[in-house]
Image (cartoon, rainbow over the protein chains, first blue to last red):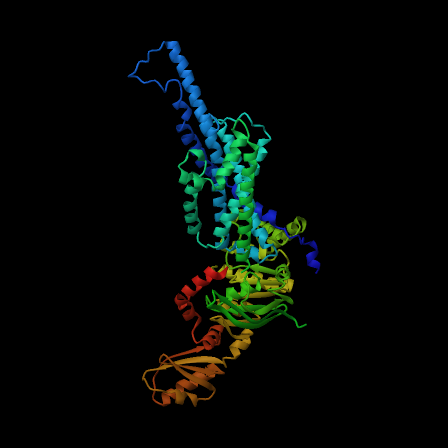
Length: 302
Length: 333
């Protein structure tokens, strides 16, 4: 057929066109883009600064007005310094850094990844409702490409937004750890890529069946708080009550956050732990992407 | 090989194991014709189209387009057809040209070729001046035209139009008909369209299939279908409530009389001549004619004849079909 000469028959044709369609909607609407950034920044700015744990252990915070310690002012000053170093060590041992805002900022980066992929998953509902999905299905574009482009655009968006959060966190007091080198940023993106891939596949598989926008909203509300608080976003897992620990310990977001913390804010990197964290998030991504694509594929081929 | 472009044999779609949307449908569409699927909402038109354009798998039966089996060779089918869906599928956040190029990318058409085709198509649907405007600023008619341009980007041999004028005002509808006629003449394309507007089917289609409750009731050209009614229809009412069927049957040219809701529906070949004869005969017999109307056959009469209800009734009884349609929408894909 002569018409088909100028047509590419690659299995993956259209993937960039469909991905770019999603991305265009996003970068052409800067207001929406900025709005999605506001929430994590507020969390970071308010909670990160309000829970300023290091102020609890400053030399002033141990003074009790009703008790006059039998100490000379120099001894008192020494005790203050001693108290602060104990406090700093407690923070260091609890959070892996003396700066709580740095600890939380990494949590927020993962949180942004979760939110962005959730919202992206909703776009598939619109595509169904508005008939675009049917339109795409009547063209020779592969079914896998239709799903993959959704996953890919969600992942790219989430990675970009997470990077912006990291940049915003710097003026808010974010401190890199002693083990940080610029090359670690690549490792952070590897974590983000894997977790976004898994999460967006999950949300797309959930949403592709619904024709109403209320369904994904309900699913999101149901998932987002437990996923956030039963993770190490705000508090280290080891200090949680045991039942919560057992939930947080299977939450892939915890592994992502802990891995990213090792790369960004911890004084030393435990490479065996890091390998475990990569493996866990990697397996999560592989399994969910496979399940997501297989489920969506079967649904689209009905 | 025959010149049938679309062939369907026993095409059936059952949703959820018990909801029969399309029930053993057979039809053939010849090369270069406009084939119309006419029926009320929920009759199975869209389900049939969705099977033909390979987005739904038939439960039973088979169909082929240009010789390609819709189930087994769906990719070949997809390359050779164009689809103008019922909904406005163009992305509101993108411009007109971006939408057309996106469609081109879905067919894997190179940018060089697609840019040239896009500007030709925009010219054809008279949207060149608006190509860089976001689609959300477009009117309903403009969006319909944009859908048409998108459906033509791969130079399809067969174009599917699902309710192409649904929700358009009268002028825009007429303009859309003009484009459809142009397509047929200039590109020699075969067109398959669904509609529930009788006048639309009459004005555009070379062949019509009337579909109701998932079954094709009759197929033919608009003229054939109208002729099959056996002429004009005269409706007469009289003052007294007595049966005059026998009386009317004896009048010259009268072919058939049916009593419906107190009025007599009379079929006659030459209505203009028969009507005065009827009045005269009834007056002689002492009856007072209170109402008489003469209708030239339209597709509405055809529809009434074959489905037993008028198109409007069918639309109204859509209430009961509503539940069915909601279910279908849920299972559609």
